Amino acid sequence: MTSVTNTREIEAPTLPDDENLLRIGQAMSRMRVLTGRRMIGRLAIQHVAPGLELSHLDVLDVVRRAEATGEVTVGTIADNLRIDPSRASRIVADMVTRGVLRRKASQADARRIVVVLTTLGQRLLSEIQAQKYAVIGGIFADWTPEEIERFSLLFDRYVTGYENIFQASIKEAGD
Image (cartoon, rainbow, N blue to C red):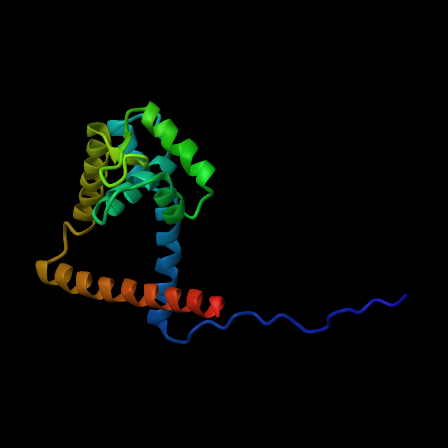
């Protein structure tokens, strides 16, 4: 029996020659580590609801965003977080027990159960926003208003471009 060995070499990725692109790439890596640690969420939990988990913040964010377009069900949460409905159901049950969410009958169809924020859930979302803006304010404390405005426009443009490329790659993978 003979074995076939793949002799094709794996090529190392080429780095851009542009110093600015290298700096952006390095900054992206540093930012990923910081956001991966979810320091803002951790601070908010510490101040408002010790014992909550970071996954609970993801659910709160989904509920907040989805409430703007209609009623929120466990299925809505599962779809938005891309998790199994049974897992979403367990997380919601835990959050109901902790007083962050509550269940109620749908106004549109009383047979359906929807999920809504409690006062504690709203406080937690407010604390997350306050922590986020405190961090942002600290970062920009020594920037001029013009620098902040320019950065905000460029950063929004950058993130929009990033989202567009990501969405196109998902669409392409589905074809």
